[in-house]
Image (cartoon, rainbow, N blue to C red; front, side, top):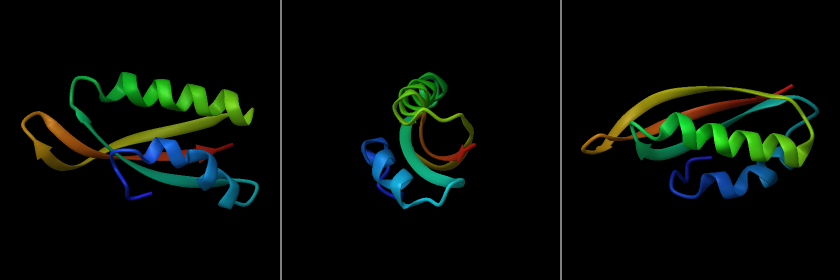
Length: 78
């Protein structure tokens, strides 16, 4: 999901495209100090919505602006 500013809005659509289990690669642009809290909030809401367990990993990809980076979030549906 390469649309980093609003990619979380399309998690439901990406989930529908998966087989029973899979990994969604979501890109997010966020300030370094806020990224963990924002991603956790997004994942918690998504997990409750689909009623499945999710594990995720956050990787810093590219600088975007001062103290702001593009992150890849690997979301594994269990």
